[in-house]
Length: 227
Image (cartoon, rainbow, N blue to C red; front, side):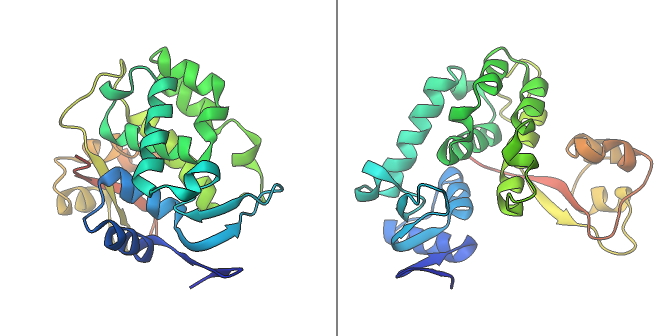
């Protein structure tokens, strides 16, 4: 387990299981998403920023260092609602990704992104969100870039008018194997057609519709409830 000073930093399943054990219950989908992204620190450590901000638990700083993770998360949900008044009418996937972006500070700094979301222009918001130096910087970790890209993809998948669709659920992923093709992947994961597979993989939609998929390529394949 990675160490920062005296703190043990837990990641992914280890972090999720630890926080669930502390709370004595399973985590909600939103809680699990944030814990997987933030990890869990057992002791106070200084983060990697220039300010070396003291941090503990699930990325908890400042006044939230002495409070529980659910309290800290609720604060960030409320902040997201304040920035995005129609938050409760968005799909569960986008709600989760916007909150994790608030938790990291991206949404708070993204004035233009927020304006586009609030205007119902999710495609424009998706492009604007990645139009920043932090995403393009070669020194930015892949984990942070992937985290930002997930927000971009959730925005692209949102309905044209931001109306909540109860059938819309968070996507699971699949890594293409040698010999796979779009039809076989779609069929194996309960999707009705290549077109349905392509529509949940907008960044490679054209290639999928041409029947192309690369070994090792990660694709969205099916829905897993976030409710």
